[in-house]
Length: 173
Image (cartoon, rainbow, N blue to C red; front, side, top):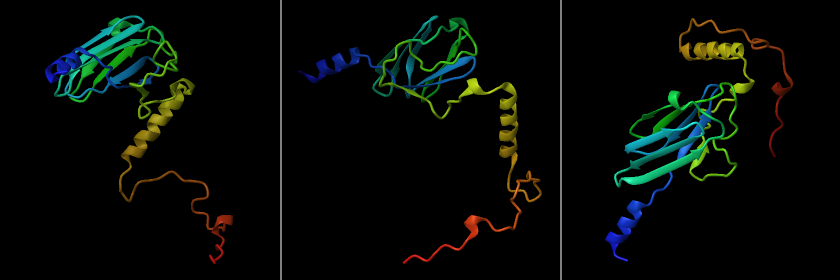
């Protein structure tokens, strides 16, 4: 088979773009990992998402069609393209409903994975707990190398009494 014919066949083929997803209370986020994407097309439907683009220096065609686990609001769903990826923000049709998976079917898709860096088990958290966590996170981020920072007291931190783990270890033979 001549090389030019092989290139033509490959250019007509489409392969899914690799993607990562995570769930939040009101939204589901999907990041399609395609560098230097062009001709990005994202179509939001009530129970389906269709993504296509040309990617990379060789303008490889990508096509992803996802039958979604639950319905979304297509009018309030958006996407944003960067040099490295396309992030889709899908507004859930029913806020506060957890999505255990992105797809309607339980099939394992080799191009789709969970974005564990952004995953958060929000359904067990109350708003009050989250605000306490946010305040704690802000406090930790604001802590620097200043000497006069007043740290909260930890029980037993200044206790000079001997613990069981303070005993001398036996010599190795």
